[in-house]
Amino acid sequence: MKSFILGMLTLFVVAVLASSAGIWLGVYNVAADVPHWEITRMTLEVARERSIAVRSGDLKLPSLDDPELVRAGVLEFHETCRVCHGAPGHPREEFARGMYPLPPSLSSGDVQDELKSEEVYWIVKNGLKMSGMPAFSAFDDERDILGAVAFVKRMKDMQPEEYGGLLEKSRGTRPEGP
Image (spheres, rainbow, N blue to C red):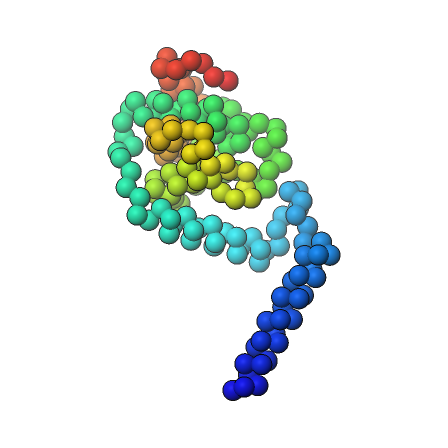
């Protein structure tokens, strides 16, 4: 038993030293135009999904069906989210196309099908490390965050005409943005 423990400890020390040497030597390329190794991508994806699920599990959101909340949310989305995620009839800004990971299209339906409202809320409020997704709680109030979530949950398969109409209606409630 003693030799097994000593062997495991030795293996652990060697792994730490090898990892440290690899980091020091710059073996892992952190450039945004080079994808992660598959094992790195899978590890980060599982860590992200589990972290969001655990931290959003106890959240209780108010109803996101309030038309005023959705109306405020479309303007919030257009002013802050559209530049990276795009919107129906509005492609991502040029800089966002060079981000890695590429921000998901929020009108494709993937986010709405994969994430609960509480998970989307948690992401918008807290952001995601090393993804370019900021924590909107740093500069937006709770109503703006809830509005953006309410709108995102309705964006699935939205057509440019519908988006433009909602945006036009919402601009009557706040000063015009970009």
